[in-house]
Length: 193
Image (cartoon, rainbow, N blue to C red; front, side, top):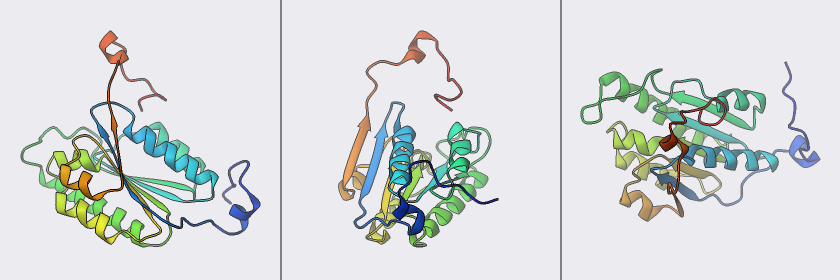
């Protein structure tokens, strides 16, 4: 089945894919909701300019609404998940299976970054994977060092290490001012997942 171009896509983007001229490194962090949502917004905006985004989701194996949305806009947004179906609960000593899935995901996302097929690479929840001792700080710093000049990379998740903050170009921290969870409103399909 032939993939359709998103409505309103310029003729230039249809005929010859656009490419990012200068890529930077970004971090979306903080203890509030919105990090993945911001990265998805970036991917959506990029798609409007004919750019392609690869999103590697660490520690996520559950069904989220963005997976179905990405299927509808391929090849502009591709999402792959690297994680188990349930939550990782062991923070101090990771299980071998979780380490293997994280390392496999890191390898796949690194290949996507170096492939020349994508303009933006989102390492979604890689900071959380680092906090759970699944991904090393050195691995993340290496991604910044080897990033091609014409590729934008985005790291999302809680607890961004200062060493990473020091080497990237942009850091955004999501700060909770008010949250409906405190009123007992639980996660809702289409909003939180």
